[in-house]
Image: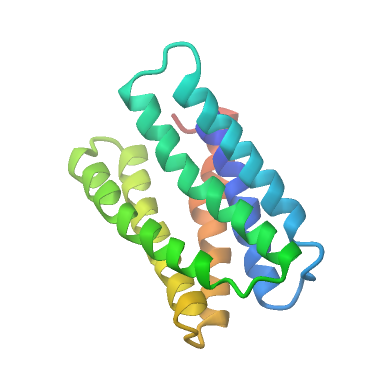
Length: 171
């Protein structure tokens, strides 16, 4: 259930960040969803890492969840501080590169549609984080493309699967 909870709000934050990048949401308003999604995924990661029954698999899940948490919290802080985002861009490169072996492992071990979806989602997230690196750290003119990819991934890798997990339609 924690995965469904996290993914539902990953979907929301990706969709809204994409709309923000397209100028549909103001700079002063976008930190709200980033703080919420980042904080929620942080709490989930802490439970996975330090809660009852924590083991190697749950600590790994926590570490990977923190990649999302830190990204969203950094976006929110940048909006409040007025930072240009270059540091977040370089962090996005770290995350994009980290997501590649995660995706490879997921796909190599996949034996169900849900596991294949997860592996392909890690591929998609790696691409999105790479776009953020190119946009923020290297100042490549990719705002519209990055925004559209964020919105699409928000729907396909977050919102819909999160809802399906929470409703019991996906296991």
